[in-house]
Length: 148
Image 1 (spheres, rainbow, N blue to C red):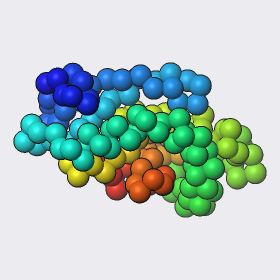
Image 2 (cartoon, one colour):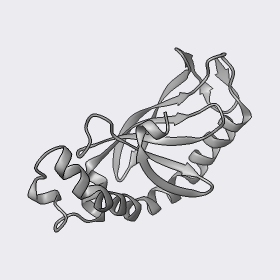
Image 3 (tube, one colour):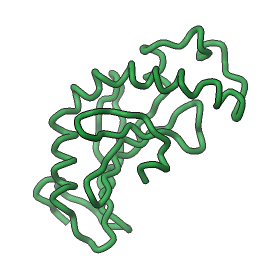
């Protein structure tokens, strides 16, 4: 399909395409995944994608303190559940510059209603990862399951 906003997309239980983004000075190929069970794309999904593209640089600038706050909030929980944290990423040594290097963006997921977020791999939860959720002109970090 060639959509007026998304461009050329392939269908496989939803529409997808690959796109390159710069995430903290590193280039990543991510999947743009548009939820669609009936092979249609909604105006809300188009609006969300446009917002992401138009505001991406501002989003990235706001992200480091939000990631760091999330990491510190869940630190004690995940250290008990998952593994012994390497010293370089323990509470004493972690900072905004380091936290962004622990995240790898994989997929921009846009649900049928236009809710969207960037699904990322992260060192502290390799099984589930995190989602950087974009809602009402604000950012939040959630587990991927909350978005997909």
